[in-house]
View 1: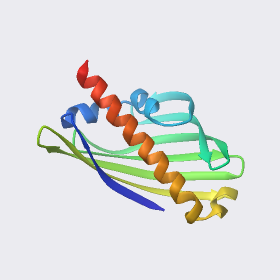
View 2: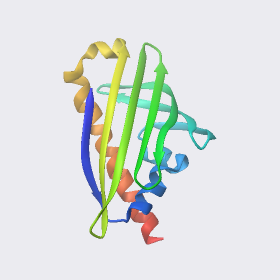
View 3: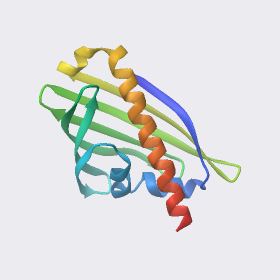
Amino acid sequence: MNVSGTRRFSSDPQGVWDVLNDPAELATLLPGVDTFDIQDERNWTATVKVPLGLGRLKLKFSFEKIEERPIERAALKATGKGVGAVISMETSFDLAPDGDGTSMDWAADVQVLGQIGGMGQRVLQPIVNQQVEQVLTALDERVQARAAG
């Protein structure tokens, strides 16, 4: 399933970039993160409890930054594996100055395989949308907090 959108931030592009491209900062934005380990600046892993309606599924995710053009664009590939499920996704964002702030166009392609993949897009789409909104709201709060010092 593909999701995309645009979000505006009150910080300059460098401020948004700094949060999005620091794996430790990124870990604070993701809901359900139990553990987070950085291998290098392009690769990291996390154990995440993914909400699925009535319960949570624990997955071990591997993240890899696959594209980077400082303060303009980055792309990330992630694969999460757990009992009866595999979630893979590719995400990207493009930043552009927007008055005194930043406009971010973002996109994600999420593939769900295994038993939970059988739930269907109709069930999974609202869950994905909710998770994306939580991440973007947390990003906005973190960018504002860093800008405030």
